[in-house]
Length: 590
Image (cartoon, rainbow, N blue to C red; front, side, top):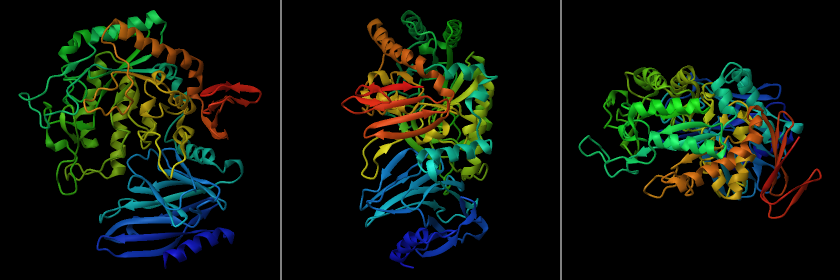
């Protein structure tokens, strides 16, 4: 079957109003062979399911592409595609490609075209595919590519295609379908229900997160494999006593509620010697001053937690052992970038739980911390496979072990937070530092980011939309608007911009506290966010039910309690229901 024949079939089938659909399945083999065949989708009402049992999948598969008849459009047609991170693109390109894998926070995607609107939920092998949206010679297609790389499948390939009609047939409807799917199968529980017997979660839902980077070694480091003899010195930015000064300034300026997260309190600071944490860093004041700070914060009415890391390992750690590192298929150690502690190695999630997390989290909690404990990295990447024969994990199993780590934090601290919005353990995640690590930027295929993740998880998981919305009150007006359009719980970060190579991925603008003047100015900007969030915090526990354009550069976010927020990105005023919205401003309507 030629590609032209496939495209003709794709366009004709919906026109013929068939009661069932087929998928074009393309198999690429490791020996260079390629096979194309049609497979029927199983129909149950408005849901059409693709299912290929793992025992029936041929050996030697490099990857498999699954393209249903309705997942296609012509350039110039009405409609759009939407990626799981919220990237939305209309059909305006003749040729182009947009792909996603590691930065896809949900196993869903969707398309609206003149013939059909659907949302796809990948329920089998959800962590083994790359999502592709292609424009070729004026024809758009959207499909997952399951990458087996010659290894046997450990799960069925399964995709549910939910066909949407009426007022459900848009990206808000797509998100509501997936939210219902997650809630019905009890993958997660709404905030309102969980807050009933959880004071830490209740407190966090009503306040901003304040992260304070206390100390760090040079980043990136000049020493890749560090020892006690060649370890670079740590920069001290904020001692425990100085954090106390920040709290005093909060009270002086009228900030009475916040959740503090200490970053770099551990041995040799942020990314210093993970997975080693203790002893508490002496240059910041040691354990005695930390315990005193925690008591002071709690007495003043603040919630205080800290940052640790169960995924990263450096050879300088006193607990270093290659046994617990993820092994690649060839048996070599899995590594990542070079950070402050040197070359970073990836810890196997099973070994992280068994060797570190259970005791480590109890030891951290023993210092007095309570709140949404932050464990870095866990939810900003897909679950990682491990090929060590002593602790082998496929990605499904890896997701379970990550969930166990986060469940321990919920038990020991009252809540669990991590870096990203990947939802494979959504039932154990109370706060995502940012829902998407991919930030809004221009791409020929993409028109705009929309709050797709938030339409699913707002009211279930607290979140901030993107890294650059950190310290939002010192950012440009567009960034400030986007934080609230996406329903963000604001977070502020003392010394967010700390890297020596100029890679300011949260923004070059920063808040600091090196002297009295800097401290007062920084807290004043936090106070602006505090005052604004106090008027909006009650929306954190509501579902985000709808998001849509009202007019060009004007967007509406609707919550489950009926509240509407209208955002005007124009350079001139806009009138909505008799109310005037000034340029680069929003209004709240009930």
